[in-house]
Image (cartoon, rainbow, N blue to C red):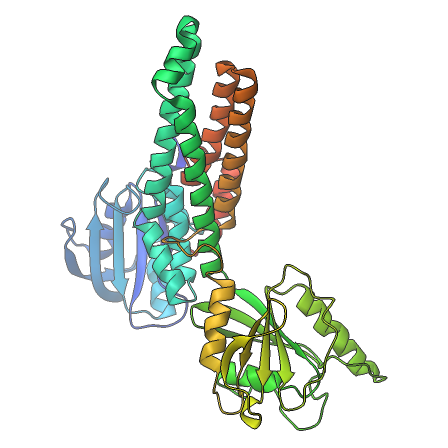
Length: 448
């Protein structure tokens, strides 16, 4: 018997700290017995019962609600009981301790979701979506995670896996009946359908990559000559006086980071020292750090004082890093505020950090650059693990089709398709190692 057959787990399922309501969650064969012992109450399935919860001496811990969800119609697929009481840390800990005294054990991080996965209530994509929904930092990230939890991503992967499984079966049938090898493959258009599957994988990989962009936190670095208005722009974007702003050039010596949301993009914006030649040792180090930050950024905002433009060296910025050129203090010049065509292929925008004019246009350019450049479609959340698995499947299937066109060997194609299917099945967890499961569920909060 496994731990899932014998263990009953318990945990506080609400956030740390005092609150109006706290929840103790139990899952496993002893869940109902423990809840009945603590409350001396008979629980009807899926009914809320007002109970008084007591300790071993009969003293009242607290009063609250008890809810019982019998297997298999529960989140974990096991008997589940939730005890809802006041959210003070002391009473929650006392009730949890009583559950542990009666035979439950403390749940590991993510163990409730892990049991739900192992009992077939959710797949691995949905399990990851639970964690993504909890940790979502933007409305977009929450919406995409909710979509994945509802099974949108899983349905696409399941359809692809079913198609691959059928085509692999047909390929193996052609091996069992070699005299009909060509007939089987041609009759069912196996190779044509495999090319279609490869196109589906490519499209799905593109969608997943876009989803990653839309949900991840990005780093944007402000660079420019001294007194160009970098710190003023940071303050304007953060709606707060984060950085010191003076008329004296070189006020910023070190990198200053602030997290802001621009449109649907969540950015760690780093304000840096003005880039110029200087004999000041501290300022030299500031310039060095500015270049180091910019070389690793997802986006560079090159700030220029439109009333007094000073050219700086930007050759150190990687060619792959997008640059938005921001002409600040445009309220002091005759330049029209907003987006305009600039040099090379850079996005350019004229604005005033002091008045806030032009900031909306900057936000639009940032969103376009980071979130929707190229392909714009994504309806679910995604992780780097998903990108890697789909990229591997795409590469394996392309190689399989290329080799079949050369050797026309169904045996080799069948083995190649097995590897493709394994890569796809790792997404939903049909094929998964204990190491991967441990890594995924250990990142969850306790009680979920």
